[in-house]
Image (cartoon, rainbow, N blue to C red):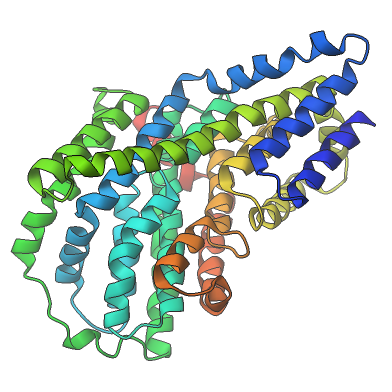
Length: 432
């Protein structure tokens, strides 16, 4: 009865417009209080204890740092220089600018762990450039929103950090390595419909008339940005610093490039950058902390075991259960953000993962792929919201383009399910 009330209260508060984190915390606290009616006040001590326990995890220190990195590189001008270099390589022509947008978003995924920050950095440059070349604004917003979703697959990734905190058998380095190949495949898969749609609908008619940047000059200007993923990922692989320390290194590197090399960031800009990243980090970490209360109430009320038994004994079999979970999570992903999905569902799904002896790293990649799909699936698509705001279009206008991009990334997720080595080969090769 209390378990039913827990989920009912959570859903009702969300439908009332209560933020997701507050809905999790309120539902969890109410369930804890009802489960301890005789010692209500003493039982409620579990609320602040689990609020703190939700935050008291070392890997979570990397989240505000990687969010700050995204904000710094957004303002540093790195994205513009990377775009010029990519255009110098691939040249001008129908479908080339969308291809460049996806490629630059993938590369920035190796610097920042935040999809919306990636969408802002790439969209700020590419949407205006694509408009000048004759691409419709809704199409440009769709490409940027989908391309930025590769950010949470290509390391470093905030989503993988949150998952590693929730699942003891999945380390951050192993998850980072596991996301590399699926992330690259997802980006390549997005390029196919992006170029095909541009050529089929004769977009970008003015692109060929625009100047092509000189290759060597653009390479020199982009070299500092090109070196960033090498420093971050190479330093972690060489053992110079942990993923959390790598986030701090990336912050100082980004400030050095923006303030000393490119001189696009002034001292007065630091307050705005710190405020924006602080607000976003606070929202993420507050949801993490409040979800800790919700997860505690799930475990104390004994909800997880009956749910696990019901799913396992449903007669669907291993792959039927996996298909059911993916269908459920894709549906949920249309309404909830990725961090919330991880915090709500991973505690429920972990016993199922253990029952079928699925590799937790592989399952983390599958779950993150689903979250990546949700980041540009209307009606609540955080990346698409950012790109649509930059493009000045309504999200409904992007549906005709986004559908093709969703299908292409879904095919990559199916491939990773069918061939787990796509995710597990690199971590094993690197010894994680």
